[in-house]
Every structure is written in structure tokens, then in C-alpha cells.
Length: 424
Image (cartoon, rainbow, N blue to C red):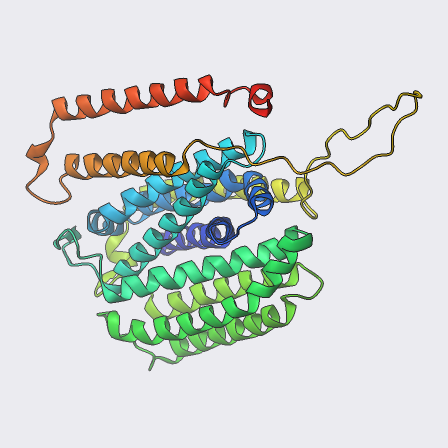
């Protein structure tokens, strides 16, 4: 029975990641469609308070999967190398953009674009991975037997689009709860259309799973059908609450309802597929590690989860309430020696990141080149590993370092690393 406890830990960590980092990713995607630099800066500052704690859950999920269900790890990982590597690179770029944007004076459009695009890419890759697993990866005796592109199926593409819609909805709900002014009003207006999109995606993915899943879901079993029906009913109630809550007070209600919808959807998926983890026939029992590893996992990872959760709760408590830009000094003395009346500080001007097309192109090309080198070095395309050896890796590393140094020297020359010089 310990294997089912490990399975529960994996599901708990994945669910927490979708709930917590989902609104982070959704806000990043929403920033791509917002024309106001001031609102984009607000979005970034909202995420900067807790994004690292939110992403800790995916690390716990990976550790729990590796130690508790190594059969799943060995089957899934080789089958989804490409989207998984791209997702990890996007998460790294996204974290870098968040921190550098937060530290910069004003709004840096280049880092803002990286933040938004990386959020979109990470979400799409996560949806592709989830859809590929649900569609069934070819395997035999716990070993992946498929090809390089077996993760790309019609159902995985639909899952990617559906996950983008879910994260956008969670991001809009979080913005209504944490912002004021135009950002708050805009989030309230976006909520209901996004709810309709998510509801449609849920119906398509739900009925599509019965076709895409090769294990042939058995809803004729009373317990399975009852649990699935209860989860769907809870999701419908939460959708109705969110529909009523968007654009109305209290502002926290839509986010709580959206979180309830996501949790209910995950429980419905588990009720429909368990105990099979990788269709059509890899079950929890078949993929589990030995008893000693299971016990060590429950103590180690199970003990870490309350600590990570406590960190999340502490961050929410510290940054509770509505977001507000830090006040700037506004007092000035007039010639008579009295202090002038306080005036609202003007928003910091957006700081240029250089010719934006060249900056974006350079970052995108470097990222794609890194992905290509990693993919070829790992031989995920099959039979092309000979294209790059130690010399090729060395050349790529030296070239990337030279470009990094050149970019930093150029930024230093224009005062990007000196806020006072940048303001002048």
C-alpha cells in the first residue's frame, strides 16, 4: 500500500504546482496582450513575491516520481524529452526575467517580452507532456519503445491549448484579487469569457479522453462512476461561483472558485484513470520502487511538503492585500521655506532595452541554439549524436560566453547597470 501513498504525494505536488504556479504563468501570458507598461510592471511585481516558492512543487513532484514510481519515470521521461527540456529552459528564462525586471528602474520591455513568452512556452510544453501521457506512450516492460515525436498527438495539442486557457483564467482571478484600478477592472472583464473557453475545453478534453486513452475507461464500475460524478458536480458549482464573482466583490471569490475547479478537475481525472498511470497498462503497483525506497520517500519528501507549504503561506501573509506601487519622494521646499503640498509621483518611464527587435532576436536565437545543442547531445533525434562532440560543446560554450560578455559590456556602457546613469 505504500506505493499508493507515493502516488498520492506525486499527485499532491503536481496539483499544488498547477494551482499555485498556474496563476503565475497565466499572468505572464496576460502581460503579452496588455499595452500598458505600468500594468505590466504591476504584474511582474505581483509574481516576484512568490514565484520561486510556487515552482518548488514541481521539483518535489519530480523527486517523488523518480523515487516512488521509477517505472513511470523511466517510461515517460524518454518519451517527452524535447517538450520537457524546452519547458525547463523557459522556466529558467522566466525566473531571470522576473528578477531583472523587478530590479530595473521603470519597465524593461525586453525582459517583459521574455517573461510573457517564457510563460506561454512553459504552459504549452506542460500541456503537451500531460496530453502525451494521457494518450499513452509506447512502452514494454517499463521501457519506452516509441519514437522522438510520439508525444505530439492531437490530444496533446488540445491539452496544451486547454491548459493555456486554464492558466489565463487563474491569472485573471488572481489579478482581480490583488490589484486595483484599471488592472482590477480589466481582470474582471476577462474572467467570464475565459470561463466559457475553459468550460468548452473541459468538455472537449473530457470526451476526447475516452477516445485518446488506450486503456478504455471503465465507467461501468459504481465507485469510479460515483467519484467521477461528484468531482464533476463540484467543478460545475465552482464554475458558477466564479462566474458570479468576476467583476463583483469580494475580490477573492473568483480565485478560490477557480482553484476549486482545478482541484475538482484533477480529482475527476484520477477517478477516471487510476490505478493506471501510463496507459494502457502501466499501473501504480507495477511502476513502484521497493518497500525501503517507498518508506524513505514518504519520510523525506513527505516531511519537506509542510515546509514548502509553510513558506507559501508566509509569503501570502506578508504580501496580503492589494498591490500598491512603492511611494516615491514627492515633497519639495518652496523659496519661502515651507514644504510644498504632496503630489502623486509620476510613474517611472519605461526604460528602453535597445533596439527591441535585435534584443529579442538575439535572445530567441541563443535559446533555440541551446535547445538544439542539448537535444543533439542527448541524441533525442536518434542517430545524430555524432554531429556534436566535446569540441562542439566547447565551441558553443565559448561563443555563448563571448556573446554574454559583449552584451554586458554594451549594457554597462549605456548605464543599464547604474540606475542613476540610466535616469539621466
